[in-house]
Length: 210
Image 1 (tube, rainbow, N blue to C red):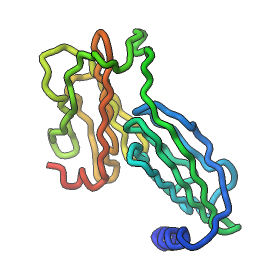
Image 2: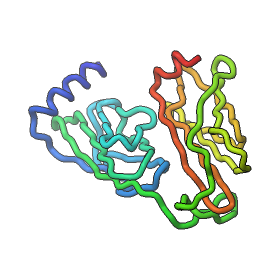
Image 3: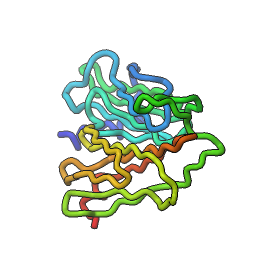
Image 4: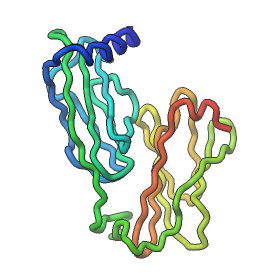
């Protein structure tokens, strides 16, 4: 039933004039922020008679994209477009929302200490991180090498929307085929600046991860 609905929805989107709907949620968010967007009024004919699609390449949908609300995480600055198609008792409706994503250059409060955001002269030389399998269902994340001492804040976001956090330099997170890791965020903090990094993963990535 779900696959049939999605096929009909995609075909119809190219040939039918849609009634309009409205999406509730922020129109501007910061890089690496996660925001929930919701159909403002009414619901589809069924629980999963919705289809959310993100356009622009700088955002990731977290969890199920067939409910009447969805979580969206921003990966880089720019503009994204979030679209929603809904099969209702009145027919097929569609709406979209423009979302501006930006970096904040002012300070922020982290663990009761105010530190600045990323700056041009930032001394953080870590450019990324890699995942290394520990055992079946457990993965470690290693930041790129550096001889400097930094603070680390990690967040792993799972397919069901769950979040796990760690402040270890090399954290370990569990995962499974039923609940894979969708996004990993890393915040590196030095005395003068911070740097945000993130990676997104397709669900199938963890099925073949070695």
